[in-house]
Amino acid sequence: MSYSNTQIPHNRFLRGCFNIETHLTLLGFNIKITGMKLSNEHTLKDLFARPVFYAAEAREAGIHPSRLSYYVKTNRIERIGHGVYRGVESTVDVDFQWEDLIIIAKSIPQGIVCLVSALALYELTDEMPRDHWIAVSHSTTAPKRAHTRTVRMRDMETGKTMYTIGREQVAIFDRERTIVDAFRYLSKEIAIKALKAAVSSRTPKKLDIKKLQQYARQFGLNLEPYILTVTT
Image (tube, rainbow, N blue to C red; front, side, top):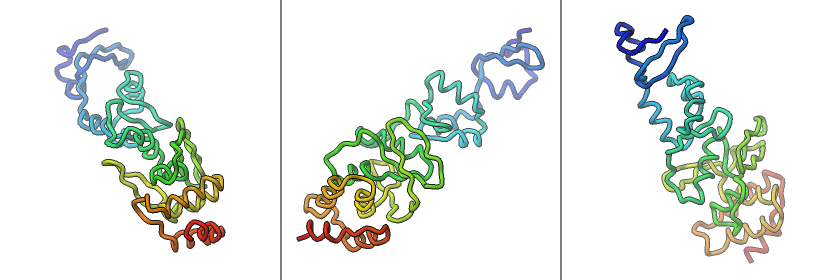
């Protein structure tokens, strides 16, 4: 049995919530409703404009998961990972080379930009990372993201700070923690080059040697020979 919108004038819920053509199966009847108008259109626009939003946020706004699946199929939003989306027309106000890093970093709850990605942001390496390096807590399951290397770390607080890129901000380890981590997780060659770059005059911000030494002792590293070499 098929009805048009004019045949259900007394159903205020249906008339108020729908404004585009759709079909619902209700009590065994196939009901055709013309003109579905979404009462939360403003909420949708807000979510779709963000670099990243979560399914939980959409659910709290009254948007059913099936609606999100529909918007993915119709190319209005993109699924970045499990329960993580972004509007296909959303923009990130940063240089093009950092856009994907910002999106990935924001898509991982409590994720922190680290290692090669952090070195690149601080201009402490000539390497342009092919993957995005994100630290996550050792107690959590590392989420899967395309072109992303997640590193599980026990200490997620030492050296944690915020970094501004364009109009966006991401969590990142500071320069001193990043160099210490380079010695812990990367090759000596990369770490020593980063240390040299950090103490050179070409970097806009000088390295805090005392903080570097403190972090090194905290993580059980002896960086004194390397520090002495690059500072004398």
